[in-house]
Length: 329
Image (cartoon, rainbow, N blue to C red):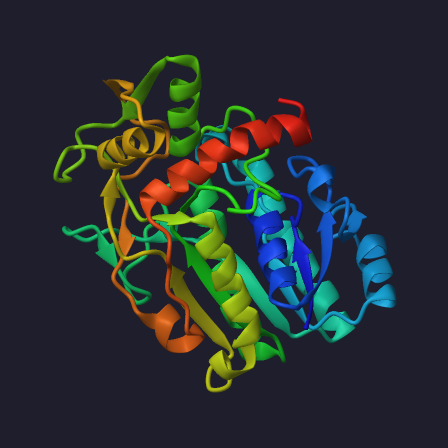
């Protein structure tokens, strides 16, 4: 298939593009490079611009017969969404609605949506499946929940078919180091661990009073390459997965809940060195977290994760010198 990836020069989008290319699909990327990197798409078919811009979209569709869209483009920083919610609603919801109009006009009916497990309301065991209650706790999470409802309604009323992939917490890097985390000091937990390790600094566990087994937040950390391969499985199995129901939600996680403190221990194992660890208050918009107990991805897409947390750590560390070579920092 020919796959259009919005945000295909970002961390997840570029890794997904690599996985699709490896699987024999043709890939077209659109990215405005606000956070994505042109270096990641230099050898790939790509267009610079806003994914919802009619002129850019019409140019793409006039030059390529797109079979499926993977929509990765979004603003994703939870604390930033708390302080600047309108920008998040404008980009993640408003512009995606514009994109859906363009897809309808072009007759492109296969849509894979990058959703988020942050929309779930955790139960007492911090375990969820696709039918679990939702309680998005930040403007970022609410944009994902809103778009899921919009997509479901649109699929019910049109020819659009949607696979909404609810990501858990991607970590690591493409094992071949073709692309990776493009931000020098990312705010997520793996970025903070890397900074502490590189600078012999202190890693702060933000939030230690959650009702988890050790008080730190719990997450379903998934290697980004496994996540990318889930997108390939979604493309390969799209028609079968949407044959009976035009809108499907599928959790993409490992099924293993790992606390932040446990991730720090895995980081120490992968890095081969102890860290200085402190404890602090949660960040704005933080939640205790969840992990998936669903096997729907395996049943519908034939996908299961293969990588461990230590694999993720080692790949993330291996990316650092490659990042400096490719991106200059």
